[in-house]
Structure formats: structure tokens, C-alpha cells
Amino acid sequence: MIGVYKVEQAAVLAEKIYQIWIRAPHVARHARAGQSVILRIDESGERIPLTISAVKGDYVRFIFMAIGKTTEQFCAHKRGKNIRDGLGPLRKPSEIAKYGTCAVVEGGV
Image 1 (cartoon, rainbow, N blue to C red):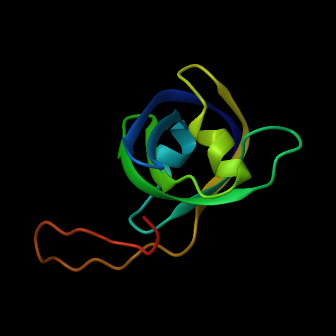
Image 2 (image 1 turned 30 degrees about the horizontal axis):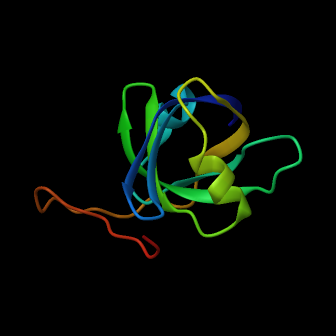
């Protein structure tokens, strides 16, 4: 679903590694392990795919590395800043069998 999202929390985790929580109720309700969202931070910005790393209530967390113009602009967003639009959750969810607690690790950060 396309929606306008708002940054709830942003933090630096390490050099060029950022964590951003956004309010995205539809995504949070439907997200499954291994899925992503395509975000566009402003009207003229490029679309970037980011993997969902956690969901809590109406909020979705992304952890990413600032490696280009758009991700550097995104990591500068502070609490309350709007994100122009987003689409997701996307991709086929990861299959998880009943093994107990699992961690899904994806390429990138």
C-alpha cells in the first residue's frame, strides 16, 4: 500500500549505519520476515528499497548504510519529518519453520 509515513525515531548505530523507525500502520500490520518497503523521501527523490528489520505496533524499523545521495538524505531525517511515500510490504516472505527463535540475516549491512 502507498502511504505517507512519518519518522518516529532516528539513531546512528555506527559509522554510516543508521536505524530509523517510521509510523506505517499498514506495513506494520502486514509485514513478514524478509519483506521490504520502497521509500521515496521527497517528490523529486529516487525510490530506494529497504528491508524491514523489525515491527512494533504501528512502527517499522529499517537499519541501513548511508552509501549514496538518497540514503544520506534519509539518514538526516529527524523525528516528525515526513517521508513522501512508500510502497510495501513487498517480496515473498521468508519461510520459517517451527525451530524456535530465528534470526533472518540479509545481505547489506
